[in-house]
Image 1 (cartoon, rainbow, N blue to C red):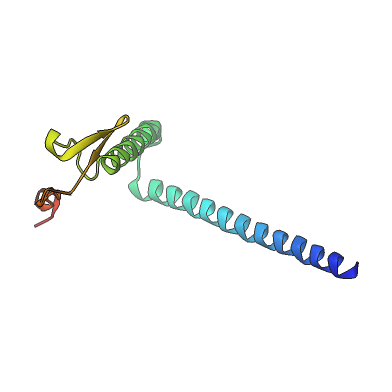
Image 2 (image 1 turned 45 degrees about the vertical axis):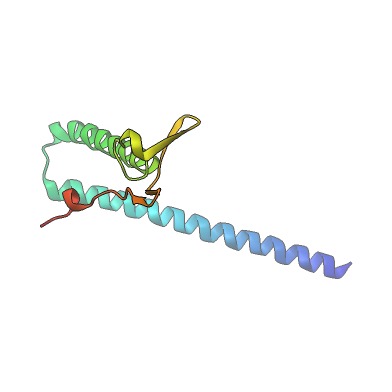
Amino acid sequence: MQKKAQVTLYFIIGIIILTSIILVLYFKSEALKSLFNKQSENTINIPKELIPVKNYIDTCLEKTSQESIYQIGRSGGYSSPSEDIYIDWFTENVTYYYLDNKSYVPNLEPFQLE
């Protein structure tokens, strides 16, 4: 009976330690995000009247960027694949890179810096 109690005690202590570590890491990352946002606002020197406009633009830019990245990821790296390099799979257009001994890998040249 004593061994079961010991195992239960170690299990509870392990859960408490794991939960504590997760909470510390979460609050640490949130504190760093908050500090970064405050520092970025201070270094830009935006007038107080324009801070709501800046926040709106930042929110819009972040939302649009995330949607774009998600869409490009779903379409295999193409923003709008041509009809000969994808197949319809349920409601998605699945892009393929190699079919019938022909490569359809996207060209990176337009995106590379000189």
